[in-house]
Image 1 (cartoon, one colour):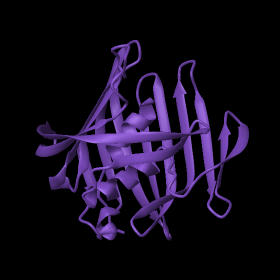
Image 2 (image 1 turned 180 degrees about the vertical axis):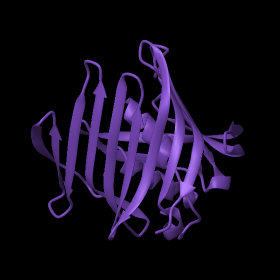
Image 3 (image 1 turned 120 degrees about the vertical axis):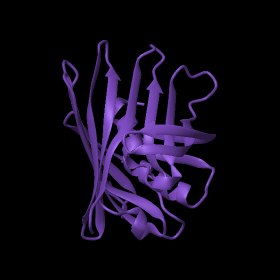
Amino acid sequence: MRISTLLITALLLVSALPGQAAELFRPYKAVYKAQWDMGISFGGDAIGQLQRKGDRWITSLSAEALIAKVNEFSEFTVKDQTIQPQHYEYHRKVIGNNKDAVLQFNWNTGTVLNDIAKKPWTMDVTEGTQDNLSYQMQLRLDLAAGKTELSYQVADGGKIKTYPFIIIGSETVTTAIGSFETIKIQRDRGPDSKRDTFIWCAPELDYMVVKLQQVEKSGKEYSLLIDKLEFMDL
């Protein structure tokens, strides 16, 4: 899981009671304290926001530290508790390793136009396919509905990838905004994977992620811990 996906997983897991999508999708701003290990360790803030734009929603991430900057957003619609991505962008600046990607979904033709490093191409997608942000939103809805089968088809890097998750159990997490009894979730990478990703969601905060931790096979670690949270008016 790349750094941006790691961050977005934590920023977007807000949930609500079944059938209450309007409450689920309240605009908000969340600030997380982030720690990266990219050969050297450094920290910074990761800021996630959700905004309303007509009949569409825009969820975004902005994260910046000493040698890294990530900006990412997804524009999507919601129908019958299903998230449908429309437009996605990812922009990363890291010393010696920049990347830009744009995905434009066309649900009339069942295709997505990928433009990565200014090399566009089109591939087919099936109903329910998500982008690297919108699948997080679908996960919110599924947790709200009490689902335990959490697996998503994601258009990522010019391929359709499967992102499965499993529910581990409960755990208390202490943060700057309080202590919460959380549900701990793990990205299911298979028994032979040397990479671990864990997410802690707080039911008291409508299943918002309050903590995330990822350990790479190299031993490098990335983590997030919620620091501030503000809900906005529609």
